[in-house]
Length: 202
Image (cartoon, rainbow, N blue to C red; front, top):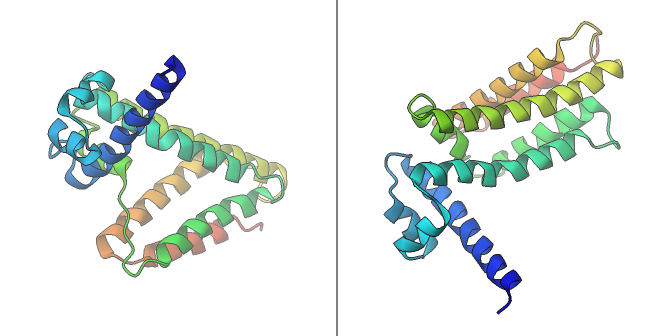
């Protein structure tokens, strides 16, 4: 077996642990999840966990990046689509997400970053810092698209795009939380309707 093959197997196993372990930690919480639960979900011996992660905290930090780095790439691609106007990119992105949740008989949203932020942001500085970094990167992507919308005349010239991106991002996270609590996509409909009004040229 070549070293390249060994490296691929190692990477695949690490990704499996990250994916399965994050699912468990999202449902049970950071404190409610032990290494034993993580390895059971991944179907690996407990000793294998420590080949990849120094601790449960290290696992959580790596899982955040593993899950959200690709999502941020997709977000940037969607909001950078040259075939659509900046406003169409933003509204279209959130409309697609809303349609996804609306298709579910009982809308469910299990958010790893949300779970960690509520439970651990104040208790563990490295995790809080990582969560904030991911959220800030998302806001910056949106702010860039809003700036393009302003330059295209789709927003007033005096628009503070950074502040508007923060507001939209926070509103979306709040709508997702309300959807989870109420098991209804209605908060997402409200969000989208207000987003369209907010981004309609005047």
